[in-house]
Each structure stands twice: as C-alpha cells, then as structure tokens.
Length: 142
Image (tube, rainbow, N blue to C red; front, side, top):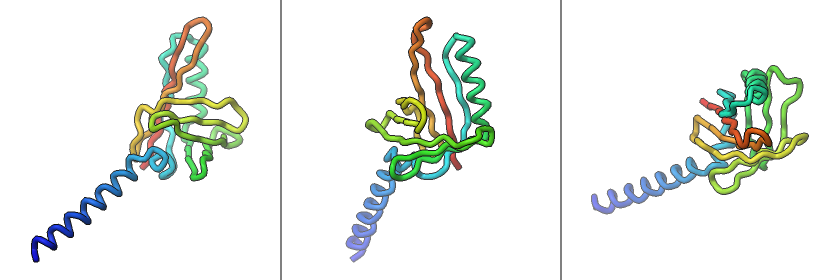
C-alpha cells in the first residue's frame, strides 16, 4: 500500500514539475507574464553620433515600462514621452524577438537573456562607414 501511495505522489509530483517547468521556459509566456521596467541601453559603437543617440534614448526611457500583451501587441510607456509606443510583437523560434511599432520600421533582436525577472535583447545595425554595431536593451521585472 505504501508503495502505491509513494508511486502516486511521485507521478503527480513529476507531472506538476514538468508542467510548471515547461510553462516557465516558454518565451511567449515569460514575455507576457507581467510589466517590464527599463533598466539599461548600451551600444558597442565607436561612432560618437550613435553614442549620443543611444544616450538620448536611454534618458527618454528612464522609468519606462514595457508590456507584452496576449494577442501579440505591446505598449511602452515613459513619463518622458508624450504618447506611448504601441505595436505588435512576435517570436522567431525561442531566441529572436520581432518588435513592429505602429509608426516605425520593425526590428528583430536576438534574445540574450530571458527569465521571469530579466529580459536582455541585442539589436544589430549596419552603418555604411563603420560596419555593424549592436545596441543592447535590458528590462527587469519583480
């Protein structure tokens, strides 16, 4: 009888562990699981003009939030921007995030880190003079 009880508890525990673990690892579920808070914006470029633009964007994103909503839409709000940025989002596989703002060109980023509490993605751009450079964006969530 004890063997049967142990086996039942083991099977149920294994099922719950598998269920919750697989949900945690699903990128779409992790992205849309709450509101992200802007943390940082950096670039590996040597171009001073691009560095200045990244610094300006970082300043404008101070205290910004990002919410990936079910149905593939997102909204970025910041106290320093007049209007929120809205658009659609999608995933390519488990490691690429496509953000398509309503009034701008879409961008594809490589997801560097995605956990329940941290999102880091890298966008790579081409510059006719300097080749390519990357911009890394970091978000956190409690």
